Length: 283
Image (cartoon, rainbow, N blue to C red; front, top):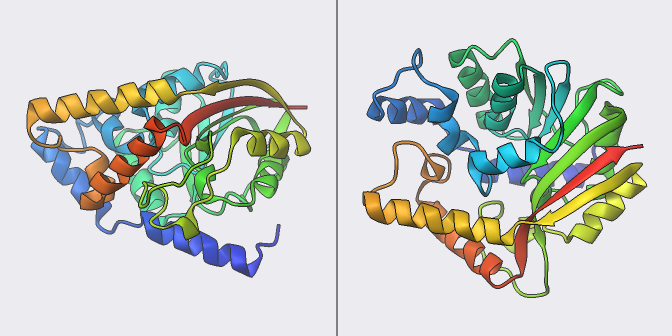
């Protein structure tokens, strides 16, 4: 698939938004504060930083439980970030997972984390566009996408590319922040500094794109209440502890996280956006 020049520019903007130099050193420092080393770190130790989506590990567990993953599966992670969900699946289900992500910092760091945990034989991460993935047709029999579509305008070609690399009958799970009502979004948010790089769409846009790519929609779920409960829990922990944990959203987002998270919570509370799940099957 050929990437249009304007799309390359948009992807560069997205990669720059998420870029964070020296990330592996920051994570190592956080582990040291926890009394951990690269030899003793566990998947659970890293979940606060490498499950970079609303609901964290709990959201991952609930979404993946709907895919019926087994050790025989080869699963695709679209927009894999640091690879936290991929490592969780490889550890929990003993399956193989291949991920793609635009941000070199995330891919390089994610590969190191896989080595620390001894999962580099089952998890591979690639620096790549989700619109032109480095895989052969019908490579995977399961796939998922966690908080990725908010940065991709061309959801039609995104779904076509995912369909290309999935086997017939494969399940695909989407967990994205979606627009659920009219209203003005506040910026910055975790996925966009300004409205220019915000590609949030409603569930209907996703469903049309999926159906045009040959998917059947099996289920849909709005997770607004789950999200608000999650953020309330984070706030309560922060107030109780007084300071941020050694590893967390601040590790990836730095000081800008406060404005980003506050704006996102406001928009979710006002019903303008919400994290939503879609489960689909390739015909």
